[in-house]
Amino acid sequence: MTPPTTPYLLTPGPLTTSPETKAAMLNDWGSWDDDFNQVTADVRAQLLAMADAADSEFACVPMQGSGTFAVESALACAVAPHGKALVLMNGAYGKRAAQLLHMMGRRYVTLDKGDYLPPQPDEVDALLHQDPEISAVFLVHCETSSGILNPLEAIAEVVHAHGKTLIVDAMSSFGGVPLSLSKTPIDVLISSANKCIEGVPGFGFVIIRRELLDAGEGRAHSLSLDLHAQWAYMERTGQWRFTPPTHTVVAFQAALAQHRAEGGVAGRCARYTQNRDALVAGMRALGFATLLEDRWLSPIITTFLSPDDPAFAFRDFYAALKARGFLIYPGKLTEVDSFRIGCIGQLDVAVIDTLLLAIQDALSEMGVSISPHLSTHLSPQAWSA
Ligand SMILES: *Cc1c(COP(=O)(O)O)cnc(C)c1O
Picture 1 (tube, rainbow, N blue to C red):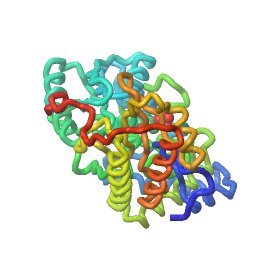
Picture 2 (cartoon, rainbow, N blue to C red):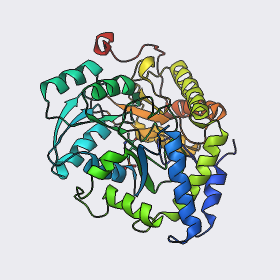
Picture 3 (cartoon, rainbow, N blue to C red):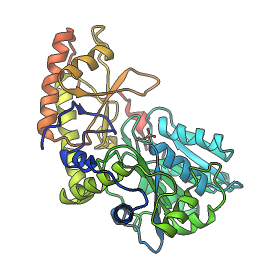
């Protein structure tokens, strides 16, 4: 892998992109021009194929902005004004979905599992039995706040059995974790350019069942985040409804070609998993503990507990690693001190090995000593599934 000219971003997007992806941004494109429209059409078709979603059943609608803009537009389209959503929460992104529904005046209930426990299929089943008014369920696939990979397939079966709509925030997993819309009953899937497909930030996209898209006409609370209007305009003209992030879209097409060359989702998942395994083994050897048990670790990002040693301060640790060419990510837990390290982007095991040396070096510079302990933080009872 060619080393980047900037520090390595060990973050869940924006992340380290390849020289080819960066180079694709060196041209300017007319937003209404045929050449650019073809890029948009190609990207939309490739995303449907990556999701294993039949063109007759699903549409792919790109939306300008960061990932949250796409989540907002999807919720506004897929949750009927007279409907009610069940939001499954175990971190910041589930909470954000509830906040979005609140702000757009949609009814919702929540299942809040705290910082990191996974929502269980039988809990979802019970809630759907209790409250037949629930019309849609929202689930975050990889909850990036802790790095947990939630049990999507099992929950999808439950939601499908109840005949409800399933909306999945697959922002940080799509393209890096296998997922098939023809095998798993998902109605709406949301992701963005700057996560596992390794593009640069600027737009998100929604893969949505065509009948839900049709039903969403006129529902949006927002002019610019009207998913149906964006889709209708794009179908009619081939263009984005308002100024598209042209350079980002072209870079994304280059990133898609590299994704294919790496063996698609399977190839990328294999590399990310190797990164994660090398990272977790190396960090445990240094004495760090992961927040989660192995079976819940995603190949996307891992949360480590901060050492007890008072000489450890995240701010100093961050600065010491930055000086060594690596940007890590702060923790997002409410109960315990933690930090996160991402496994996605243009990184391989050689980069992780260099990172581990840099971490060891930074700790000795800070005068931090940690006693090796291999157990995870959580008690086994907390995990009884
Ligand atoms: C990154 C991410 C988002 C979107 O965040 P933005 O900052 O708006 O791009 C949403 N959900 C999850 C799970 C994410 O990882």
